[in-house]
Length: 268
Ligand SMILES: *Cc1c(COP(=O)(O)O)cnc(C)c1O
Image (cartoon, rainbow, N blue to C red; front, side, top):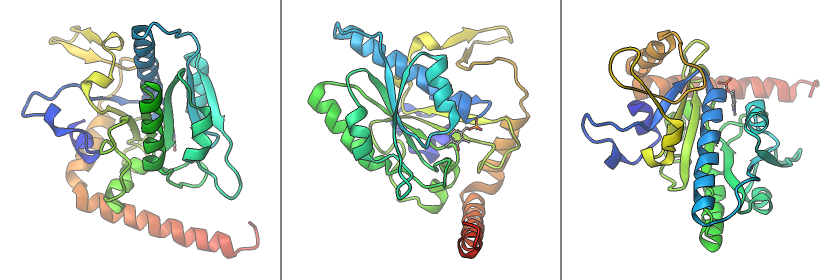
């Protein structure tokens, strides 16, 4: 978690020395990570509304119609209205202008995708982030940004380190990434990270001592093999920045080569 929190530029002051606070969890994949992030956004929103004495029975969440199916699942499973911005043939992603009219006081969060499921394109997280910050200030809202970096989370930090999409943006409160996509681990591992421990509501955390010492647990399932976690740790240590960069650039080169073949074939 500490390696990924660093990679995504989580604020350092909270991760001093050996006293690393809980800022994330391993999951089965990005889907579970997104379920957990959605729950925490819903809880934070409700807390904020309660404090202001406002109603909290009609939560909604804003994303583009290019989201992966897990976002629709999260809406149905957790009884949240999904407000989906249409994308068009000439622009297949969420933009700030498409998102803005869908946001109101009942919005628990806005999801930006780093690596759209349709075509791999990155949404402009910074632009959407700044628009949401402005709305929050104007209306006394607390709408956070979640970045679904299922695929891009293991590409952008290595190929575009100057692209500002992660915890460097103060209102990016949570990020998910799939270890089993460009994290290069076999299937069954994802990661959910929160900016600071405060961004994760206490009520969602359970503490168990079945296995000896106190263990904090925030997952949908419980028992799980350790092999993927070890595989991820091994790869991070073994490849490092240099190795992941080389592999990410090679992957992009292959994608671009294949794109050329498709583009100039008469099939598309
Ligand atoms: C793959 C993907 C998911 C789902 O991730 P899993 O790790 O397969 O659960 C969610 N969002 C995006 C953008 C994806 O590409």
